[in-house]
Length: 145
Image 1 (tube, rainbow, N blue to C red):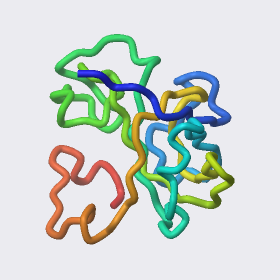
Image 2 (cartoon, rainbow, N blue to C red):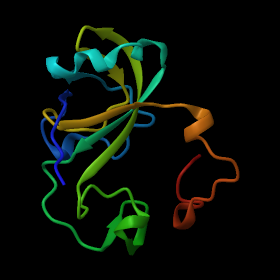
Image 3 (cartoon, rainbow, N blue to C red):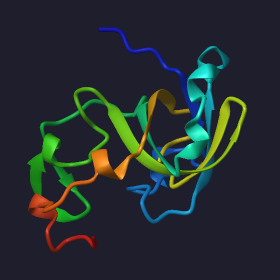
Image 4 (spheres, one colour):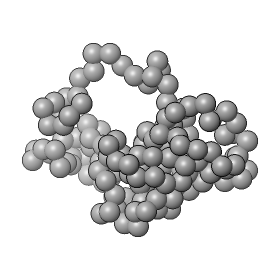
């Protein structure tokens, strides 16, 4: 398997400790720089209000299969959490698209360290990405909806 970056994320966060735990609810504005050779792939992206960014969390150092989160004192399986410390450190962020300037997207709602490699962009489509009757497992009662 081969995964190559298609761009770079630019944010005000210089370290992992500066990043918010989740992008939802943050007003952080940053830029998604798509490398020039992939710019044509941004055609028509302006019509979407939200995008799904898939990134390689290159500052993640190893993983554990059981992790503790800020929302519970108990450990949970890494695949039942949003921990960045995973066997394959792939991050997912849903951001609001504010503007496109050639190969650069100005977005709001970033929770990534400056310089994070971008591996893909997909449009957020509620009919595809939303779900009815959602259950949130062990997070029930620990976070707002």
